[in-house]
Amino acid sequence: MATGEEIAQSLQAFCESYNSNERVKQMNRDWHRIVLIQPEDLTEAFTLSLVGEELSYRSGTADDPDLKVVAPSDVLADMFWGDLSPTGPYMDGTLKAFGSEEDLVRLDIIILLIWGG
Image (cartoon, rainbow, N blue to C red):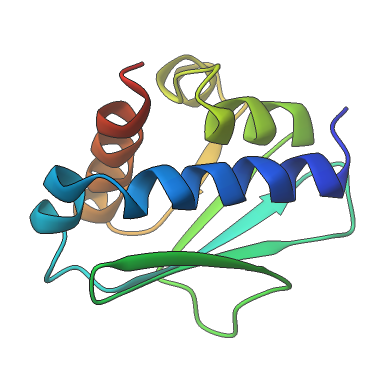
């Protein structure tokens, strides 16, 4: 089980990698989304916000997220650190994502482009 601090650190690293990747930023320049990250085994939640070309995160929930990602805390931390591709946990039901199919595919592509996983 990962702690809230470990998830926060992984999200910070993910945001830094996203914001320094010009290819990914250019690809998503017109995609503005709010993503709720909800660990199943913690009471904490986190929100990723993509506005313009900048991705940021904060602790707490989002009122009306475009996407919601739910998984055990260790899966979320490993995924946002780039140690785990989201494909396996998604296929076995450990990772649940709610949103439009287009948004889910784009999020998966972003993770793959950033971490190469």
